Amino acid sequence: MEYNGGRTENEIVNWILKKVGPPSNEVTCASLKEKIENTKLAVAYFGESTGREYNEIFLDVAQNPAVSEKYQFFHLNDKECAQSFGANNLPALVIFRKFDENTVVYGGNWESNAIVDWLQGSSVPTLITFSEDYIEPIFGQRKAAIFLFRSNSDADKSFSQVFAEAALKLKGDILFVVSGVTDGIQQRLGEFIGVEESNLPTLRILDPANNMKKFTFPGRLESISVEALSEFVRDFKSGNLQPFLKS
Image 1 (cartoon, rainbow, N blue to C red):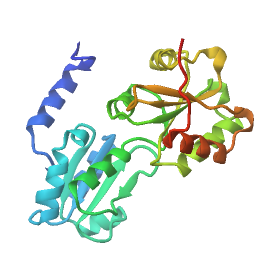
Image 2: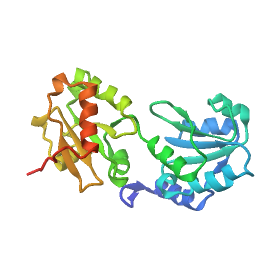
Image 3: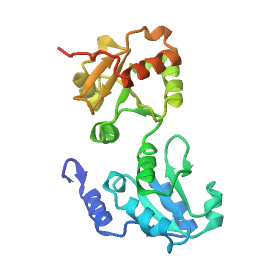
Image 4: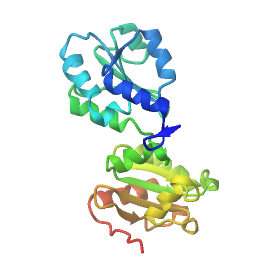
């Protein structure tokens, strides 16, 4: 049976348990490896649990609602285990995920806000295929995104490859998303942005933080380049684009 916006009974129970349970679970290296196999997003703290990094920073981050519902949090004091995941100095933070690089070691300052930003940025793929999983990272977090609307048969076209290359180059500047317009949540996205099947392929920027304004790429996708996409994003960020008005 489904409850609360589509959650199953087991999902509701797990959600409640996570809310009332500890912000982070202590594990062994063996149990960590087992748990991350069945977890979409996890982060582990490696090091002593008596210092500032754990008590004041990591636990604060683990209770931050911006990331606490996305990630499973674990901690252990095992230098050899940390090194097996590429973290050579303790304390260390390592993300485990099922896309892009499977493990990512934190290299920033030990401050709560910086770590939360890192976790949020690392919680989505470099190139997103739009689904219900990514409604919150885009619309909930009000993140600007550039959408390539295309049919399935366009996946191997040159403009799709260029779009993927641009996603790597501009990672962190804007979210890169691929979507169709004919099925389920992708169809509803197309209707919202104003893209129909007859418009494919097409590029649009959506800015949820600015009244959901939409911007259309003016060039031809058949001859698109990484530099042209970079210029489009630069013009958007500098406010030099005119929004597209859906009739």
